[in-house]
Image 1 (cartoon, rainbow, N blue to C red):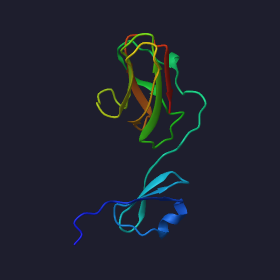
Image 2: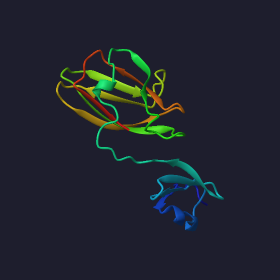
Image 3: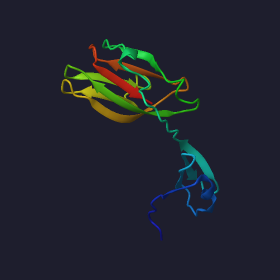
Image 4: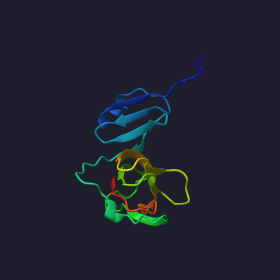
Length: 158
């Protein structure tokens, strides 16, 4: 008797997924189309996909932000960057300041405690870089909040 089964994740070209023996719940990541499929027992169902971007400069720089200690609802408009239907974005942040304990937080909705990325400068004149996934609504607008300081750099790349 099988008492426990570990789900499998397989990788390959999108066209090759039909030749893969799978059990319900198994995943197949198509490396050419960036789609994560899930086998439902009969068909491979398209799950999520990731659309990579190659950019040389950040999408948002320090001048795009007002950091006065209040939430900027719908302060970051990603509609020109993120396609319709997206449910999340991968953000790369780079934050630096000449004062310690500077913070900027980007979130799907200011009322939510989830799906947030926070850039925290704990030591003055140190650049902090990180990546994180943030959920996004159909309007493709994100909220942000920053400490009441003038940052040396805030660079956000989608």
